[in-house]
Image (cartoon, rainbow, N blue to C red; front, side, top):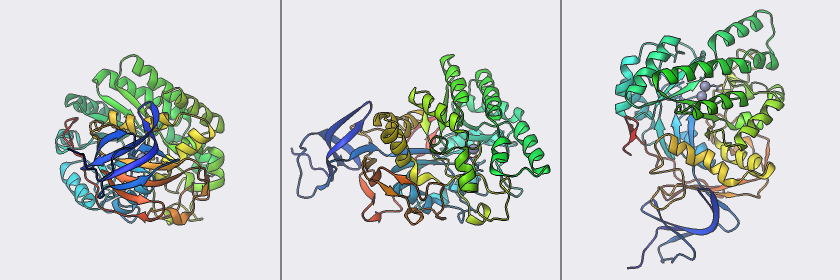
Length: 464
Ligand SMILES: NC(=O)NC(NC(N)=O)C(=O)[O-]
Ligand SMILES: [Zn+2]
Ligand SMILES: [Zn+2]
């Protein structure tokens, strides 16, 4: 019997694990059903011509803050996921902060899932949080389907009683023991609270509040010390550990060495540490403020080097936006402005532009960092992350040779500001396909904004 397909993508340069081949991709029931040459077309089959374009696995962005419930006016599932779809992302992980209540118990998870349901353009997973006082909630959260737990070693910012709190050492250690007990994973913001708090207070007290003063208040040592401490705890507790937004090559190397010793640890960095640096922080102001801060151009080069050497596991956006008045009000000094970069829509284009077009890295390596490796690390690889028979047809078409200036009006964010607005990019996402449905094209914009589903994970074992 002749196969009938709902969609065929013709003649693209298909980015498979480790190789690129000119192939057709056929989709049936939202899954990749055939890969081959000149696949048969039926009158009902939709055909997309991808001649001259790359077809990549959709990005999996493991680190975004969409801030619902309560802070949907900062971002929100609808606007945030629309931006991701426009940027070639087909699955993401929402952080347990800065929404209120933070996702630190089952009741809060329920509110989070209600806020997300029916409001996402693409599929998603959810992080729970580890905070002082919620040790007894962790296992229940895991059973309810969170992907893992997020903790902060330094103060996450935010206001009010209900805000997400950083962990003390005892909470971190006990939490890691518990998480190890049920086979979960901890994601960690690794900066020393002791170092950053003292240096920040000193700087503010003596009126040193410029962009460079802010960067100096969160030095590389703050990251290295926190990473070293967490690696020790991982070794002692057996807890799987994922370091979010690592900003220095030295920390990446420390994590790499721990892996070689047999620890189950991984490292993420973000496009902003690779395409921006301290000079950008001075030029762009608080738009480019984040923690850990952007580093020196020399440090930026070292990060590219460890990336090229395969020492970084994955790239995520750490999209953490806010309303403009909390960042761009000229009355705010650099320490007062919100820390967090608005960039979720640009990850793939930035990494392809700078990584492949400027620096000549293989496109397969970019696909591994953005899709394959995050899928494998977080138990999504039986559904997502690569272009393989039987997996979800989560695909992105990218024109590798299309120069354009990213305009603020192109951004789907709730607040259309980003340090990348105004930048000239040498490539463009032209279509994003989620489980076989075309959710975005550069010609027509966002087409479907509510088809995303929560991919629940149970006890570290995916049951999606
Ligand atoms: N409260 C936040 O969203 N913080 C985030 N902010 C950054 N990275 O500047 C983060 O991930 O740490
Ligand atoms: Zn963080
Ligand atoms: Zn973050």
